Image (cartoon, rainbow, N blue to C red):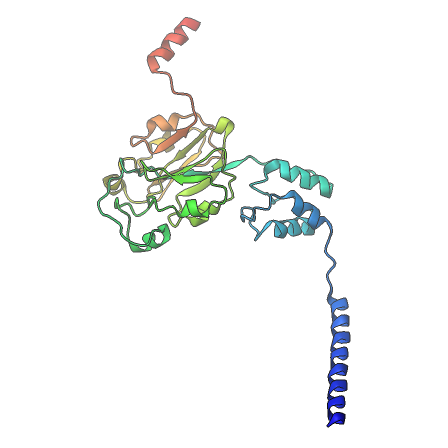
Length: 288
């Protein structure tokens, strides 16, 4: 009996040692030596792991940057240009500055302009409500106001206004990570350039229904009349599927399209109020 026990112990010990030796050689053959610069770059990143860069987390982004040794195509929205400059210094590269972006709500269907026609009583998420019905106002493209975008934001940069029932984005807190864009089932949130002095012009509507139908559900819906397209001298506005869209890369912020819109669907943010025409004429005459 003792001999059987001894043989068993010796056999198992030998197998354990053999397995350990095999695993050691396999580990040596397939080991990966990680570039120490990955840790340096990861430490420079904000650690939000928000996914705004397009990668699973900050360390994944750091690994890809080191792998390619080129900063073109890489951007950390929370860190911004300052963080990218620090990363460039570590790699001995030159960082190319990009214009800051911000999330924009492309829907103006407030409780006043898009009055309720029904009452939703179900799971309080936009995704679920979107799958069930068109919306309390009847607009199948408008904001549902249940706050999926708010839940997705890690930076407390967006909230639902209690009076309008629409999302509001904070200029100071938004880092353009894009989480709210992905969370919105109706694609009404878009990342656009912040613009000089935070000035932006955009069509605050995504309803592709024809004008009469769109206006029936929302007073400030784009009706696809095309007046803004004709007014723009910079080819910054296009019309597709009954909805106008302003290309922020081409828009010069001249504001002429704003006054042409018959439904006030085009929004201008952070601009000084326009002077009345009479006042402008009087000023021009006095300067002559």
